[in-house]
Length: 267
Image (cartoon, rainbow, N blue to C red; front, side):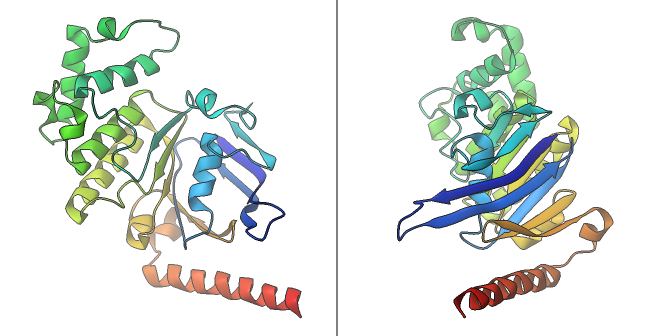
């Protein structure tokens, strides 16, 4: 279970550039929840993921995973709980290393407590396992173990990053607009893989997206953010009946309320 309680995060506090990114946000994800996150630019979506990952420390509030308080843990120490795929396909893998070397690093990370060098990590059994896992991507990578990752297409690299992120069976999987830089066909493939990996691993997942159709089609729950707050939260059968028009209406209502509140403050 992932739980955020009363999270506040402000950038450039006390200056003319002050920006309230998260404004008393609270959110609970049960085990296996797949939550899509939408909202306009500056709504706080990526900041939400970055505070969970420890990239940005919070100003106040608490973050717990399975009851363990990780609020004050460094980004590196939180990594054992998390899997993450970024918007940029160039992130999450080492471009100058082979596919099998990248996967070996992910496999080593998954073997909690084991201390082995990289050469020991890549055994014949590991290579066979890597081929099996890569074949499930259906991208022909199982025959390219000794290819440098930097030579892969953006879609191939993003699919590999996703595979590596789930290999360690993370407590929480963070997908930060991970298909935004891909062409529509490749994006659909990566989303299909995301659905399958999340379902097979029963992974608690947060997926940020700007695509309303994708937000509706994927996951069992959807939240909308505006001005650092959750303004819309829907799940289950209600989410299945949701349309893009419904989301646009909800967004219009949330921004209208914000505008009205601003007018009250300024009057």
